[in-house]
Length: 170
Image 1 (cartoon, rainbow, N blue to C red):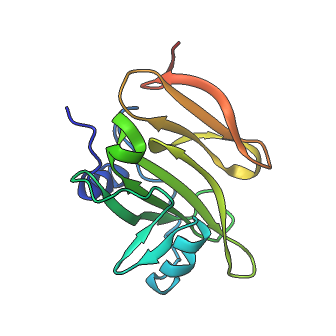
Image 2: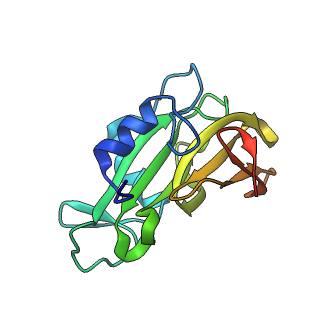
């Protein structure tokens, strides 16, 4: 199986349930409320810069075949506060190795601005277990069979455990 990032494949994984090797969409019944008109603010909060018709991070991929520019993969209220969060991805093995993708999680603030919550190389899977403030634990997938799970401690997402298909692993 190739771990080359594909926006269409990642979008499909974010929209469906799967095992720990795939990213599943936010497990929430609240609809996303961030309108496409917020796209530029979302990308800027994630640290992206618009170059031509693409949003790019500081990856600086020289144009390799595996590169895919910044994409807003999903929008949903992940922590139940009534405001949306957005997952931004960028792909390519030049910057992100065998995993081939990195994600940024940004959250809309009460004043309407957007703030970076966390980012990591890998494919996010939002789990049912939760940290402080109702933020879901995130399994960070990629090649392999034992993935790190991070939990929100009120200030940052920090390492919590490793698991595969919902079971502890080493």
